[in-house]
Image (cartoon, rainbow, N blue to C red; front, side, top):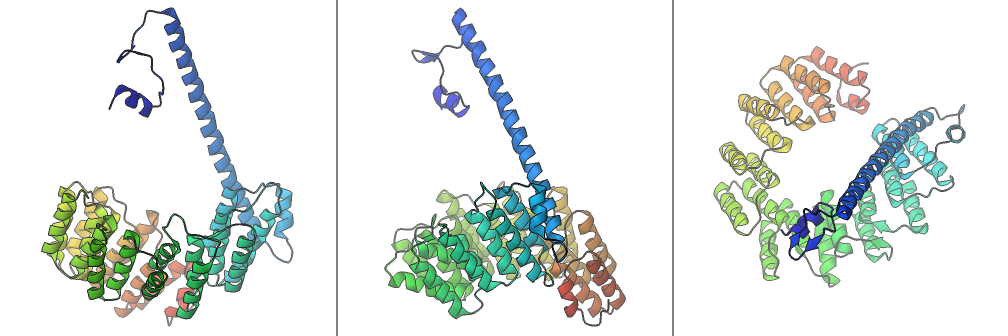
Length: 463
């Protein structure tokens, strides 16, 4: 890198030059003055940046406090208190960040008992903001309240909101499609939605190549593999060509549907059309080889990746290990886990969790616990899936006291148990005849104010 390029990357666009050399020293008084002035300007810029940072930090903190106040007012809304009137009195100014904080707060609080109320409060706040001067909702604001409606199963209101958004000049995007497709329980409804988006002139499918790719990607996120096949056929009938993203999505769908012959046909077709495997293609291939219990072929593929200039990442190794684990080949899992570390890829929480889960399923609790302690020693923080696997392993080994202690440990370390953790622990305790302990876990869950809807699954428990 030349001195000009180096200077440019450090933020200095101009340097005094004489011939091919930079004048680092000069005895001219004017140069000393110039240097002093530059330092003065740098100090002024630094001071200005500090002020801007402080102002931004102050703004964010103020908005978060305002969001808490708004949420508190909305919680009290009812016959004796109109939230809109109270919000007017608070003189809170809506902003994109405030709307995001409030709507996200409502979204997180939704449960089976308060769905209707949450939807109403979200819309009341949404309308209140739109009536304030100098504020206009963004497409992100619409998507947030759409998510709330989808979660609350207010489907008619959700569609009305989409129409309103488009009427106000906001285009439907791939994100809009993702939210709506989640609400289509029947295959027929999903196909109608796809057709509507394909034909829509207001569908902003960027950054995807065309509308079909945007839709295929949205369906992949929701594991709608059969619908992916149908959309792909429609795409070909309309004369659209595949790119590497299209091939990756459709190949993965074929694999998940168990159509390996069609998977290989697409892989060959991709090569004939001049597309080389990319980062994601290799990830799919490694998982296929792993689940097919073909460690040697996977090793050859990893070497081939390096030869083509794609260095395998933690994600590639983890995907392979996950496949091998599902195939029951734990020796190969450990081999590639060690290879990952030898190649300078430090395992993350997902990689450790995959190894731990594999050992637990195989009934090798000691190895699972050893991996758990190793990840902590390497400063990898266990997540809820890690803890669930360990709790399940302890229950399988009959170590119920340790399993209950692990539940308390994860909470003290700021990891909130999800419904799967509670269901796993309660089911295992009950199956072992430890009904009193199971009820204690349920009581603990209820005291935390979470997953009240699970009570119907815990037969025999009384409040």
